[in-house]
Length: 120
Image 1 (cartoon, rainbow, N blue to C red):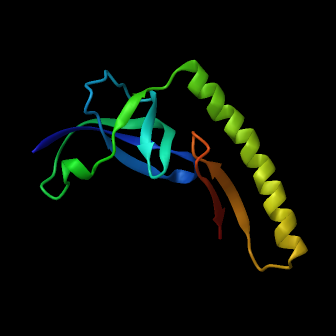
Image 2 (image 1 turned 90 degrees about the vertical axis):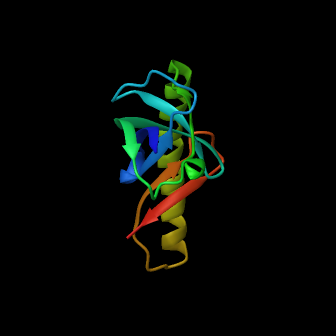
């Protein structure tokens, strides 16, 4: 079965494959809004085309909702600033509670429904 898909990269090296079910004209390097676990997220298209995999169940792929607008990109940049603040707060709590943790980064989902902290 041929599936029209895009491979999308997110912060911290996270990558996902999304179905282009609405027939958008998507190019490599475009920013897109995609369905996420708990809402919507924004990422950059790193590859596109058709996949021919028997083991990929088309119904299980999340969708590309649309190509990102300039307002979407502005919100994305605002999220980066909020992530810096979240990292500072988390690092303060790690020190305060003397936790043996190494915080690397934080990432807000584009719609703010989820904040992920990355540790090593």
